[in-house]
Picture 1 (tube, one colour):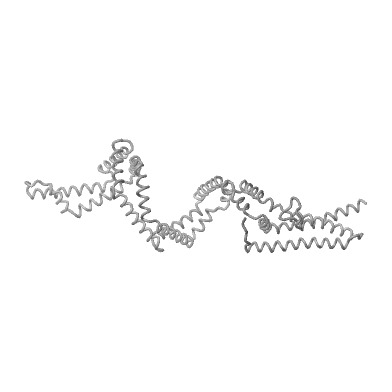
Picture 2: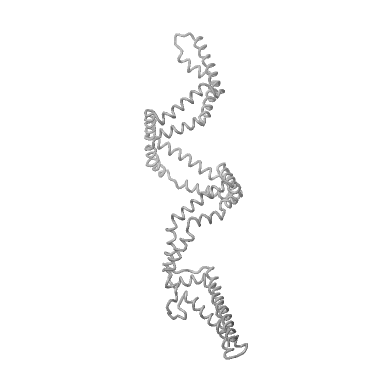
Length: 416
């Protein structure tokens, strides 16, 4: 059994309950005193006496009913009294069934969430720069703590025993082929071609001697020097002109040939057994190479240190960008009706699923907690919450009883 400590709010409820008990008891005492004072008197006092008598009966009956919920009236073990201490386990099960059937339902949770318009309220909060800054600071602290707790030994174990073995079992060729096919279809590779061609043109333009020296090594030894210089100079000019043409013409034949090559490679990576086998063999060699894990850990260490430093700079680019994105997200959540509708629908569905799936596991907490309570303490705790309102039953019983007595006495006088 557990002992429940009273909080400050419980003390306030206790004082309110005591006041209402005094009011209800005082009204019953007044009815009793009036009854005694008007006993055996006729005329108008007879009506007052009838009202007081019926008020006493009603007040006593309701006092008995209210008291019998929580304890034996006057300490007498009358059957079917002290219901809460005796039946608390049954009450707990009934309360659990009631909550499960009417409150812990997916549709009820979903509707409550939609009625709250949580997304718009979150958006209004995020839209304020000071709130976005607070959230950015908290996210940065959490990110730093998380990164700080990641040991290199843990990452090595993850890479060597989970990541690399998992990659080794996955078929890389079809995935690479599909990705390359999308890249070529969208023309993303052309930006890389532009970079290569521009850099090649600039290198040829800035390093003619090095180019001529490389080509000159292939000139036969028997050829005159003037002829070799003439040929190499001409080759440099033609190479520069050719690269410039490829750079400036987006539809150059070289570019078209490269597109065709990449398209064929994308298809072969997905359909040609030989190409697929060579690609998988290359993947396995790379993954099994001793330097692969070390390189991955080195890259991880560099990225980790850079990220920690970026998160540690309040005025750094990363935190400023994160705050800006949060503010923009807040504006969209507040003003973009389509986005808010989609997010509300998705979150509502997820909440409904969680409640429907796990409500059966959450609801037993009610009965488990109440079952651990001592019967007397449970009755006292419940009475603190509902007892003050129940005292109005006693008051109403006294008043309504008095009115009923008046009416009955009046009808009796009319009938006689």
